[in-house]
Length: 508
Image 1 (tube, helix red, strand yellow):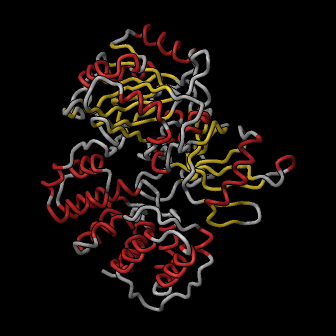
Image 2 (image 1 turned 90 degrees about the vertical axis):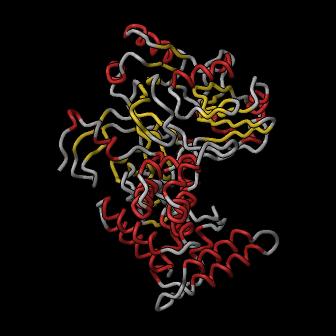
Image 3 (image 1 turned 30 degrees about the vertical axis):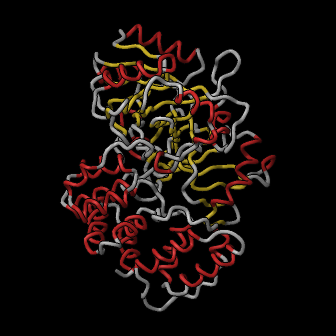
């Protein structure tokens, strides 16, 4: 298959707002791909080469000599082997070798192919939302049910592997993917609730309330003496959190998979700022600041997978294995008890509460309604699209942020507002030094970024506005913090933003 066929399909996906047309274009390419091409093609079209990060920076790529070829001759196999060689290049002289390999690849590519490769290698194609469209395309191309494909992906952690299995072996083989100790799976996600009363009414009497901690999501796997700890984005941090590893080693079990949160506490037992907890996640060695885990789900225990078991059964297994490290919670509360539990959570320095249905299975990778989060302050996780240079006291600093919500159909983030409020001197300095690493282009007044950084924004509400492409604008938006534990794929969608409109006004 010519690489140009992949580039053309990507262009079709970018040019249409129709999810059906996106799925059709991707499915057509998958059907045409050869056996050895399905995995790399799937990776290219979702912005994630199967080789992982190639290790080549933006500045190196833009400085390459790139005289484009007049007609397409590159094949998918050519690009795959070229990227594999790049990923394997290290040691003395590797920088020059990388530049030579990239130049050799680029001069064989047409202008359109060069542009695609540049965006692929710098992460600009990694929108995250494209995964959902690609999963539907795999189902369409293979004849599998969409739910079969989604479950296999969430358990395998690899979209290329899922696609290859569905297309080459058949839909029935997707059922062979299961929870594997030491291989992280996508976490179950919660939807925001309008209020505590609304969540209680929707989920009914059979529910559990838990503290919503201001911590970092962790997933822990143990198989005998082998322990692994992963972040929300499935990045392994085992070597940097030895206190968590030691705790899991001491649990009364042979094998276990746990879902939970961890955070740093001060001397009085209250949570430290989120940034202090996250500082441990960037470390490769132990730090003085200790992390305290609070587990809220058990997905496997001593040879038994519990993903499809109801929460009530998983919670019982959790209590048996982690004891005092279960997150604080109450079962089947009255309205008054739930309100008091929320008050205590907030008074203890936490964000609010989680409301969960006791009969719900663990829906890996899904943001369903069986888990709902209740927070007194409206917040959204949005993608930073650009930043404007400041004025006055902020002259020389990147300040006013352009904010985007995720397009659930795989398009680029949809701009919904700007803000410079809530930015401390420390954050302004960080933005000014860090944003150029994510720069895609700039003008005299604005630095535009690849859509990778996620920021948590507090707001008073949303209003209809023709100013932005999504038809909505944020009201009194201010920066709470950056979320290094999240990717653009975890950002809130434009649909979530629109649901915050008063009376959910119609947007035309």
